Image 1: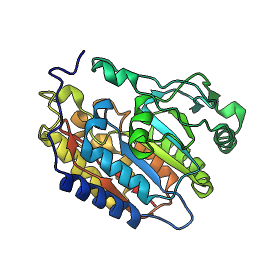
Image 2 (image 1 turned 30 degrees about the vertical axis):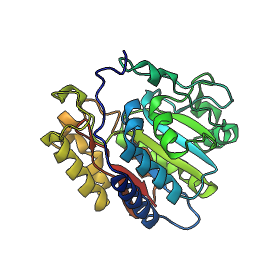
Image 3 (image 1 turned 60 degrees about the horizontal axis):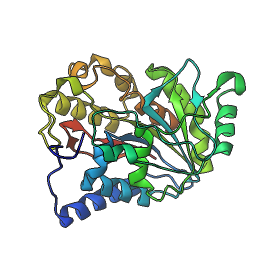
Length: 290
């Protein structure tokens, strides 16, 4: 597919971009604990989100407001492998995975040659119970749920990155996984769950990047924002009971990474949403836990 006829984001002014970046940085700065790297849930969208000047500016400003991480540990909606969590490539030179189809050719040229993180792989294995409790896929590169947001946050690809699979979609198990990984935050590791706050692609009427959000997307986004703001983990675990969830998450893998980030946070820790708004009518809400 070529770029001809491919939907484009509406042009935004430099002032709008600067204001969005300033808001993201301000919110990120307000939800931090001294000496500890926050945990994040990112709505990563699809490769074309890197054409959204607002989103790229927001993520760049967000990263700039965080402590420089020693490494990034990321779980993505696009790697579900269990029953044990599995680490991806820990050596250099493993290419990213273009795990999408139907996009213009330029999106399949994307690369993100981040330094490997073998030491982090060993530390994750130890925290999760040793070799018998963790799988390894050394030939698996970063998927787009990992490299797309990291391209916006750390465009020089100079921060070591390790991807970890989602071993299950069960919220309670993912909360426990995040809690087991929590010590990494005191070691300079940025723990990231990468999904999408609403992901009801089958229920979108048209593929328009600036489309107004359907009511189910607005409703679920409002519900999630309220539950997060009051630290209502029990409600979030029961997200399938929300009427709009059947449309917002007909499959739940894009909401599941939230629970890893939430588990890595201290109960009741300050929270912020540096990125909000919609893309394709889907919520881009992304969250930081201090």
